Image 1 (cartoon, rainbow, N blue to C red):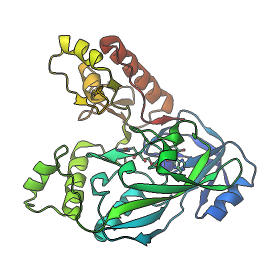
Image 2: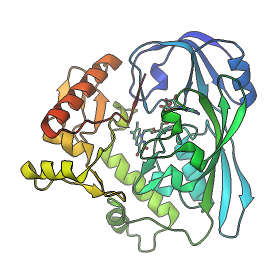
Image 3: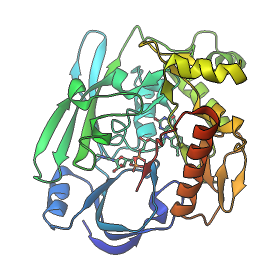
Image 4: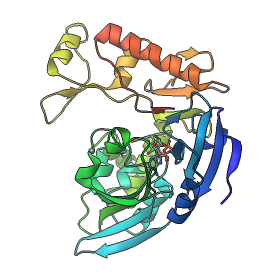
Length: 336
Ligand SMILES: Cc1cc2nc3c(=O)[nH]c(=O)nc-3n(C[C@H](O)[C@H](O)[C@H](O)COP(=O)(O)OP(=O)(O)OC[C@H]3O[C@@H](n4cnc5c(N)ncnc54)[C@H](O)[C@@H]3O)c2cc1C
């Protein structure tokens, strides 16, 4: 375990932004995390794959990169298993492992970047499935006391791209492992969302398997989202706003075909990408940053952008959408 000073964070964030950590350490175990905490360096920032952060300045204190690994089946039931996964495992590696074991539940979340430990923070989701659907519990270390604590599903307060760890618990814990409940037979396949069904047809698949669904999701995502290795980004920059129906009805007066999805509580979700596109931002470049040509919701770094530049663009987009539609977009990405 090596504590480094003034470490460039460029290799550790998918936006490809320059910033430095005053102190930086990689931990492979809970014991190493506790050792790092004993250094007394504060504040502590837990870093996973850096795929959901916008670094707008250098990081003071200690940046801890979570590399706690390990995947193990901890309980077996008739039709399910509980699998405990180290918080430092790469999310997609875990998904591929699950698919290779014929364990179902996470295949629709293939290719989401980042670590397993960060997945509960914003209750990651894609193609009709969210982390909370397969979540059992998690282990976390309290950064103030060094004590381990288990969080049940209710304690995590999961919501749409939201949890306790983005609110009251923000910056207070390091999630060291997550336990998932996965099906071992009679899988509940979810092929109705987005283009999955069509892609499976194009692949010639008549009887979908977990592996086929995972492959279909990988194909769709690869065709729509920019690869951070090629062009810096953090995926969707904004959440899709959830509004009262009255807001939608007002928008429909000028945009009768406004896309929307009903929510169980009677409200509606309006795609943020559509709102941004209507305001003329899609594919628009501002300096070294811009809104991605194929998906307005994704802000990109064309090379050499600063975090402040991206933040300024995000604020300009928020302002223009609010002015045009009376809807205030909320960032999904954590601005640091
Ligand atoms: C191309 C692309 C596509 C994406 N698509 C999706 C998608 O479909 N669905 C989706 O939900 N997200 C998506 N994202 C966002 C991102 O993949 C997720 O938010 C992911 O969970 C972030 O993981 P990370 O390890 O990179 O977190 P980081 O960016 O390292 O950290 C994000 C936040 O979590 C905190 N954190 C990280 N690890 C821990 C830990 N172990 N304990 C406590 N706090 C921690 C950090 O302090 C920070 O506040 C996408 C991103 C990209 C770049």
